Image (cartoon, rainbow, N blue to C red):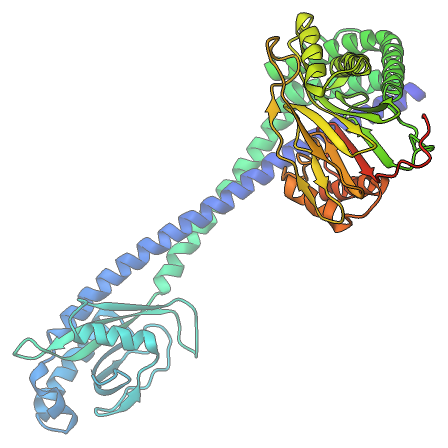
Length: 554
């Protein structure tokens, strides 16, 4: 029983797929028929209107030859009665002969073409079952609308040979019709009146009706024929193979075991390729599942090692604050935020002796584990050489020579190194391609110290660095940073910038080093607005207080 229900369910699914495909084809055919009918109808209507306009013009032009333009005004006043009646009889006979609803001649007020006077008005209501009443000679009336006014003007000014107005919809009891206007000229070839013929367009609707019926019948017959063809051919050659592929994909998703290969199940290359893809997918997925456990374990191992590397890097720099709780002559604070688990930025500070504090900040080229290893080597070299004594430029010369001698990876590092004499505030420093330091003197504002840059450490073995000096007054603060600060960006890749960095520093220039760094971090995070951090961000701030009382060894 269970197998029978499953088979019936599959048959229903296949039937449903067939119906959907055939139904979609029929709908497309019907839509195509409708669109084709609409396009053909529009083309037919436009062609009919052009033909109707041309033939009506010739009718009107012929009628205009029956009217003598020299005596029109006298006709209205009752003069030339015989001539008027004779012309009227000609026009009346012509109106019935060509089977039009109206032929009328009007003289238009040329001041604004807003009024006209009727001269002739012939009516044949039998043509289109209308109820027009003929105007008497001299009957005055306002122009129907601006469209007629513009056409009257074009006729009188002879800028147009004739004008035509279409009224396709029934309005005010008037059936659809075409009105064609031609000039009536006097013996001096001047336009003195306008002759109009109003002709029904019933023929248009009579001609369109069989056209639409033929299109509808053709569409229905074509839809039935395609449905029968699709029912036998598409179902066998397309629907059933696709359903077989679907059944196998469903089975694999449920059981997650490789089944019998589908092979070439259709004459259509696309469906056969799909079947081969399912076979390949099953084989590859089974192989993937077999290896997934090992890959996951390896990923966890790498994650653990990166976490350990991050811990080692954090412990390679001073990270306990306050760093020198026994000293009241300065306050120092630093932070390091790598873009990845580990980074290439670093900072360091340590007492060389009781009166000299070394301060270092650096930025290694690149990111990740290679940069972190290079950073630790550089930091160790700088620390060991600084404790041996010497000026900042001598220390950087030594470090550069040692790194260049073993730098097969062609990496480099920017370094700012300073040695502060705590008793006097004298600061000697050297800059190896690093960012400008920022100094706040006394109660002033933070400003860039545009010191002389040497070449990066590790770039060239023969590089020699130059030092410089400046004096920190009590109350002065020095802010050091890597390029991750000014080059932090928002989601539109706009940089934080040095100018904005100075604005943040000077928003609270008297803040402690810890508050300076926390305020800068908050400003960068707010500016980024959730954008990904692309570079390491490292900062260090020292406030020199100048007091020598209670100094103790850290």
